[in-house]
Length: 262
Image (cartoon, rainbow, N blue to C red; front, side, top):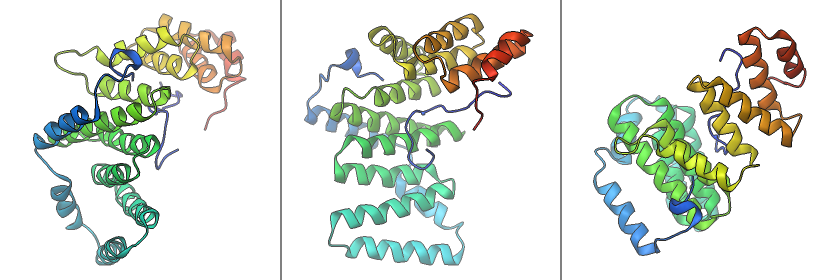
């Protein structure tokens, strides 16, 4: 929509948008998860090293010097947290160069070291941004598979955090599986059934309804949010846009009065 907000993911790494299989039950032990991850990585057609080599060839000389100096600091660091902080700078550099796949791979290394759900969520979010922006099929697959793995790791460490589950579902929405194209929607609907008053879930379902032009469902979902939180900014802005587009100026003005554009 012309005025619609566009936040596709609900957590952020550099910019401020899942259910576990069987809706919250972690049915796989760590050895199985590692085996699955290994299979995914073994079938990748590209690697972070390949991406890095190609991207470095496009850098200015001072940028290359900066990265080389950063690498030396990382290698010489005696403190794990100092090393992670330096790696975060490296990831941030590549993100600002719109090399989200490289940035995500570095974020994944940090997550593997720290072993906490937030770090895995950051890696997943970065790969998701890559998934949204990339058009090259192999690179899109690379980011999709790594985003899925990262969010599954985050969920296994913090299964009560619905944000991880929502973000996993949105990956499947962004890149539907050939064998199950509705998986992302099904995951969100399952989350909604289990958590009917969760605003984040309702928001994503409302946005998807708008995207697929299911306007009545969008109105119902955003209205449900306002029943829980009458001044919810996102819901009011979407409803304002919907009613404005349909010609209902009275309702549009009502919701626009509570809509603050960012």
